[in-house]
Image (cartoon, rainbow, N blue to C red; front, side, top):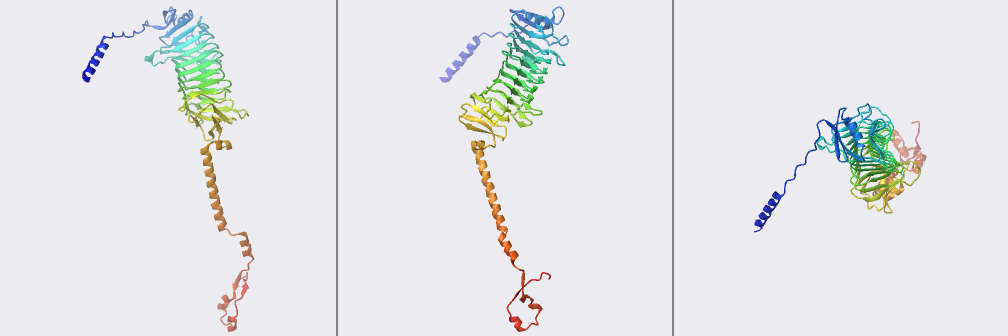
Length: 482
C-alpha cells in the first residue's frame, strides 16, 4: 500500500513537470561586425567602428557625455592613438585622459578587453581614467568566456594616480575587471582617492602589479572612504603600503585577499596619521613582504592615532619582514608609554587569526573591550607576550617583570630554570670544597720539619754495639743537601 502511494506521488510529479512550459534560451546580444564599442544613452544604443566616419571609441566616449547616465561596452582593445592621448572633446581632460565630469554616471563593461594608455615614461596626469568631483564610474567585466580579462592599464603619472584618479567628491564602484600594470612616481599606482568625500568600493576584480614611487602601490587613500569587499589586491609595490596606503579618511577591508604585495614599510597595508581602519569578515592579509633598508610591517603596519576596528574572523598570517613573521605591527617612535593606536573589538570571532608584534618605542598595545580570550592573537616572536588586564588583552614586550608575572607558563618556566641552576651550583660547590684542603691544614703542614728515623740507618751500621741497638729511635732533621 505504501509502495503504491509512493509510485502515485512520483507519477504526479513527473506529469506536473511536463506541464511547465520550457523557458526560452537567453538570446545573445547582437553586435555588428567590426564594432569596437557601443554606448547606451537614454535607452538608445549606438555602435562605433574604427574608421574616420564612425570616429571609433573616441566618438563613442564623447557621446557618453551627452547624457547624465551612460553604459559603455567594449568589443575591442582601446589603446591611446595619439601618443599619450585617447582623444579630445567633452569626454577628455588633461590632454587626452578619459574623463567623467561632475553630474555624470558612466558604467564601463570591459567585456574582456583593455583600455591601455601605453605610457612608457611618467607624464603629468598620466592616469588612464580621471573621475571629477560629483562624477561616478561603475567598472565591470561581464565576458566570462574571456576569463574576465578586461584591463585598465598602461598609466604612468608623475603627479597622481597611475590607473584611476578619484577627485574629492567622486565615486568609483568596481565589480569586475583588472586595474593592472600602472605606475606613479608618487601615490596610488592603481587607484588614488585624492580628497575628502571620494569613494572607492571594490566588490570583485583585481588590482595587481601596479607600482608607486612613494605610497600605495595598489590603492592610496589620501582622504575619503575605501571599501574592499571582495576580489584581490596583489603583487603591487611601493615604498610605503604595497597593497593599501591610508593617510586619512577610512579604509574598510571586509573580504577579499590582500596578498604578495611588497613595500619597505607595510607590505600589505600601511595606516598613517588619522586613518580609520576596519578589518572584518573573512578578509585575508597574507604572504605580503616588507623588504629593504629599515623594513618593518610585512602584513599591516599601524602608525595611525585611532583604534583599529576588528570584527568577524579575518586572517593576518604568513607575512614577513626580512624572513621573520611580521603580521599586524604597531609602530610609534614617541617617548610616550601609552599606545595611541590599539585594537577595538567589534564582534571578533575567536576563529580569527592575527599575528601581532610591536616596533619603535611602543611599550604595549591594548585590545579592548571585553575580549574573552587571546586565542585569535598570536605573538609573532618570542620577544612579546599577551596578558590579561581588566577585561582587555595587552600585548607587551616580553622580559619585563610585569610580563613574566602576567604569563603563568613563562613564570613557571623561569622558576624551574632558577631552581635547576641553584641545585647545580650547590653540587659543584660541595664537590670543590671536599677535594680542596683548608687553608689551616696547608699552613700546619708547612710548619712541620721533614724528618727521617735513625733506625732506618741501622742497616748501614751493623757493627754498632748492642747498647746502640737498645737505644730508643731518634728523629733527625733531613739534610736538604742529600
